[in-house]
Structure formats: C-alpha cells, structure tokens
Length: 81
Image (cartoon, rainbow, N blue to C red):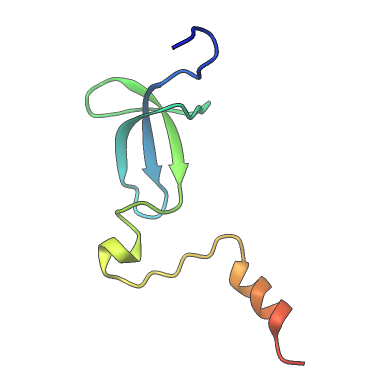
C-alpha cells in the first residue's frame, strides 16, 4: 500500500442505540466520542440505529423503527385525493 493515501484502519465500537448492544470491530470510520469497554481500553464509538441485536430479521420480533418520519412522508405524498 502507498503510504499517506489510505484512512487509518483501527478498532472501533459500534453501539446499537435501540438495544444498547455494543461490539468491537475494525473500521476506518472516525468519531469524536469514545467509550471504555470491559477490557479497559478506550475506543471511538460509532452509534447506529439498527444492528443484528435489534433487526427484525435476526430477532424474530416486528419492531417498527422510523426515526426520520419516512412513513409519514410517504403517506402524505401518496394519499388518495
């Protein structure tokens, strides 16, 4: 790899905001927020809305997540006139 052209690849924590599930993986994503995990190390934290811990396909539960108002926007746009 050429030096200086690739983003830093490091360990980060992804935190599911719906279920408070956290996991450590490697990524190039950056964050100003940090979190201390059980191993005592401090990692940057990336907050996500859906992960395998809260996704209906993996959990078998039908949890409706609409944080951006997409359903209301759709209904408003395509309502019968």
